[in-house]
Image (cartoon, rainbow, N blue to C red):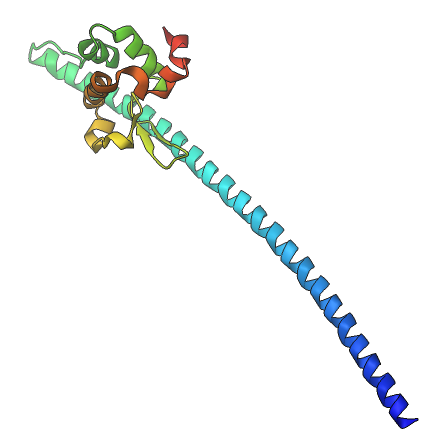
Length: 186
């Protein structure tokens, strides 16, 4: 009888161990799936945070751009007053449109349309592409062309660099040309 009880006890212990193993495995699998779901949600949240930060940067750039224009207007008023006092006429700097006409003589209307489609002809505009490269300024020059800071922030320098790229590659270097989006602005 003792041997029989011992055998039953061993079978009961093995059954309990198997049941516990199954329960523990199920709990572990549930926790693993929950962790995987939480990880995906965290990654989505992080992506949303990054997008919001990029939008804030663009808004800040637009606000800074507007403040820069206001400060330039104030400076031009001061220069104009000084010019009147010295009897010197105030000469305003060339507009972006004038600069584009200066460099893209034969094809300036297409250049104007592409610049408008790319940046609305604003100088302080940056865009991060999905492949990790950056575009800057009026013609949204891609970082693969190694633009300097001056070429990104100075309108004439950006237009000169765009013209050099145009001479090498034609309009194929601009996404708005390839997608025909520029045609809306002709």
